[in-house]
Image (tube, one colour):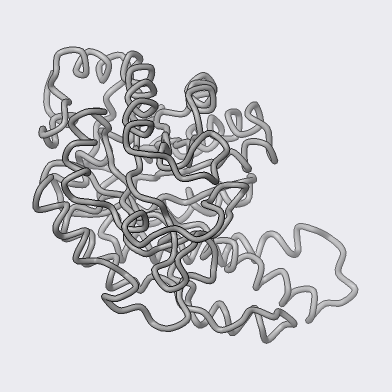
Length: 361
């Protein structure tokens, strides 16, 4: 069994200087594609499920599917992560179903669309930390509202995302608040707002420093050198995938995502988890369109899904290699939840410590 917590995995990533792509899943085919890619390059894995994915597939199906993936690839450390939890119940039920990590996104209120103030965020995030750490699970928090610096708003994804316009100071994580937030909540990882957003339509042009605030990543890392940073909304929306999608009947307007080179820059400055969903969806959807166009009489879902899985597998493998994740699975000796809980209780994993989850008890 190779179920790993986010904290231990990101501690290892910090120790060895790499980042870990976090891929969202909704079904078996996506899970198989991710694990096949990881096995090919010996990479540890973060699989994420949003509240929308849990509603679509069902908690029991996701739990059993993750168990099966773990048994099929026992050599691959696998973190199962709740993406964008909106309250304590969402996070607690995820842990109940085998998630080893949860995100409590207190940047928005429980409706997942109204910006929350700093005090609310600290309070609810700390409560989730208390719940999770009691059994050894990890917690990711978020400070600042995920959204576009170009148009001043967010994008809905599975029912999550700010509604309406928000101010620039809400769209950029304040470094002083970041320090206070980490120490008040004791989160294991911190997602920061720096101009990225959910979905394919992140930027209307190749992003520069005015709309993708990578300098903010560097400043927060300078102040919190031992805190694992997270980049949300970090699909790159490759041009080749856009072209394939459109050449077989799609109508995706020209768009730009987060360039891989900017993500690599972030990894050099404390980013350890990189959220990717749109790229995986687009890779599979482009193949669906291709098969449907080239084989108009085809009705066997497997003839659509197998090549789509292959396309997603290739994309995941590329990200494992680009982020430096490849080659590290074999180096990790998984620490059980009970031992992680003991370390939390002892204070060994408080904010400000680093790489202690890989150390001897």
